Image (cartoon, rainbow, N blue to C red; front, side, top):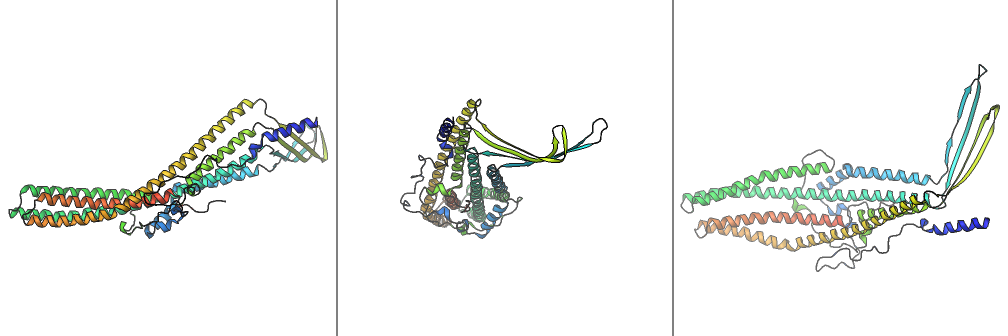
Amino acid sequence: MKKIIYIAISALLLSSCHIYKSYDRPTDISVPNAYRMPDGVDASVSTENFGNLEWTDIYTDIKLQDLINHGLANNTDLLIAIEKVNEAKAALTTAKLSFLPSLSLNPQGGVSSYDGSSASWTYNASASASWEIDIFGSLLNAKRKAKVVMMQNKEYQQAVRTQLIATIADYYFTLAALDRQLQIYTITEKSWAESVETIKAMKEGGMTNEAAVAQYEAYHASIVAAIPDVKAEITKQENALATLIGDFPRAIERNSIDLQKTDIPLEVGIPIQLLSNRPDVKNAEYQLASMYYNTNIARSAFYPQIKIGGSAGWTNSAGSVITNPGGLLLSALGSITQPLFYRGSNIAKLKIAKAQEEQAKLNFKQTILDAGREVSNALAVYDAELKKESSRELQITKLVNAVEYTMELLTLGSSTYLEVLDAQQSLLSAQLTKTEDQLKKLNAITSLYHALGGGREIDVEE
C-alpha cells in the first residue's frame, strides 16, 4: 500500500513540474531590426542610447525644467499611478504572508441559570491555527504573479512619467512657436500698414490705381484678423499646460523658441535596449509574465490541497459538566482535498488562462513593433528637419531681398503692385513655415527621447 502511495505522489510531482518554473521570455520574441536609421547614418555598432540621458540634459531651459518638476509633483495621473504601485505592494505582502500559518484567538464566556438555580459561569479560551502546505505551487505562483503585477504597476508609473515629461515639453514648445507666430504677424501688420500708406501716396501721385490700394488694404485687414486667433490659441495652450501640471488655468512664463536646445546625438543604441528602456514594453512583458503565472495557478487547481490545522485552549465546560478549575483542550486535524467533481470547470479555467496568456504575448509583440515604429518615425522627422534648415534660411533671405527689390522697382515704375504683393505674401508664408519647422524639430527630439524610454527613473527595480 505504501508503495502505491509513493508511486502516486511521484507521478503527481513529475506531472506538475511546469508549475514551478519561473517566467522566461518566449524565444520567438526578438528585436534585431526594431527600427530604421536615416539614410547615411550608421548606428549599428553603437550601444549609447539617447534615451538614457537625464531629462534635464535634454531640456535645458530653466523655465521648462520648473514646469516639468511642478508637473511631476502635482499631475493627478502620475499621483494615481503612484498609488497603484502602493496598492500592488500591499497585495504582494498579502501573497507572501499566505505561506505562513493563520492564527486566531477565540475567547468565549457566558453565564447561565436553570429554574432559579444559582448562576454558573463557563469559559473557553482557545487559539487555533491552520496552514496550507504548498506542494503543488498554487501559493508560489500567486506570490510570483503578485510580484510581477507590482512591477507592472511600477512600469505603468514610469510610462505615465515619461509621457508627462514629453507632453509638457511639447506644450511648452508649441507656446514658444505661437509666440513667434504672433511676433511675425505683429511685425507684418506694422509693415503692411506702412505699405498701405505708401500705396495711397503713390495713387495720389498717379503711379498706381485704386485697385492696388484695395488689394493692400484687404491683405492688411487679413493680417489684423489673424492676430486675435493666435492670441486665443496661446491662451488655450497655456490653460492646457497649466491643467496638465496640476494648476488652474493661468499664464505660463517661457523663453523664446530660438533658445531651445536642438542639437542632439543620433545615438539611439542597439534595438534590444527597447526591451529594457521603454516602460510600456516592460509593462507589456510583465503583463505576459502575470498571465503565465495565472496559467500555472489554473494548473495547480488539478492537484490536491494539503492543510494542517489545530487548536489549543483552556475550558471549564466538559459537555454537560462544568469543572473548576478548567482543563486543557487540544485538537489537531490534517486534510487532503483532491478535486474530483470540478475537473470540467478546472479544464475550462485552464483554457481561459492559456488564451489570456497568448493574448498577452501578442500584445507584447505589438508593443515592440509600435516602439520600433515610433523610433523610426522620430528619426526620420528629425533628419528631415536638419537637412532643410539651411535651405529654409536661404529662402527667407532671398524673399526679403525680393520684397526690397520689387518695392524699389514699384516706386521707379518698373514693377507692378501685384509683384510686390506676391513677394510679401511669400515672405510671410516662409517665416511662418520656418517657425513650424522649428517646432517639428523640437517635437521630433521629444518624440525620439520618449520613444527610446527617456525621462524614466533609471532604477525602479526592487
